[in-house]
Picture (cartoon, rainbow, N blue to C red):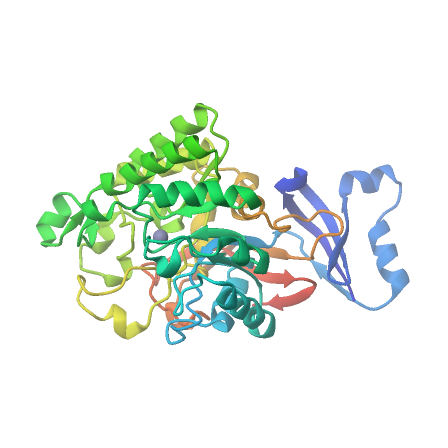
Length: 440
Ligand SMILES: [Zn+2]
């Protein structure tokens, strides 16, 4: 089966491509990319078209006026299966991913049972092959039961298919345990992804600590609860030379700590943020909107500005969603009791493209942070349109406006503070290993 995507603006940071090209897909793989320039050189009006018609059959997609990029890679999602199928399943979560333009996702281990051994890893991989729409790469728990007391069987899980390790949802509070994890994971060069939160300081907090939390009578979490752990983990990464990836950076102080670490030459440290940390502030919880309750919490305007600066100067390498679907009934609880999280897969690209409109990132930089970079950190052969790679492609209309309608999400999680927002940058087509999913 052949697919020819014609006249699209192809952006592939892995090959530094940023111009009008044709992309030929054959048998689920990228066969060739030909730019208009080389077309002129070869004095051939459309050589790819010729190759295409020669073989017969297939499909031609006219992508004129549209952006064609590698399928997006989300290195931080919660698929909830096994154990919390009422919130999300591998089927619905990967369906939401495809709708959002993601062809690969890395799923966090805080399921039930927790993915802290190779039988759970195997279950996820098998289920994803049977029912998943996109590629799924499991992340194993650092410690057994995510309790922070004993390391999981990292080697077995790695050999079964885990691409990274994290106790996400919780930090690894014990510094010796974190040191051991960073040392151990060096054997297979896998990153340890840190959910940076000092639990003794964040305590029972439910939102950012400051004037607003006092006004609302809600218990606050100071920025320092995150920053202390970022600083500790940077120190441990330096001690061990292990690979540290800092999840969901939300504060100005964290950005500064990571920036200094990188300036000092610590190339073993990478970091990510999520669309909600650069799109909205703590003001979103003013009306006790439980859909705006996340962990780490939404912060102040100056933090949002610092996150954008961190994205622009490369301190923050990746945009991940931290897709955290919950059942509607759970989000109907009062603010203190409702679980944290935003269903993020289906709004990520629209919110992130605003960074290009604002001049924070070029489109190519943005695509890199949502495809090539996360793939590189996770050590997976994705996020690229290079010859021979899986035909994972997303075609985006950056001009078409659409209204976010949570009720129509493919994800079971309708929990989003962006419901009703008008966004631009809609995936009109997602292709995964040559299979086409398209929307009006
Ligand atoms: Zn987390």
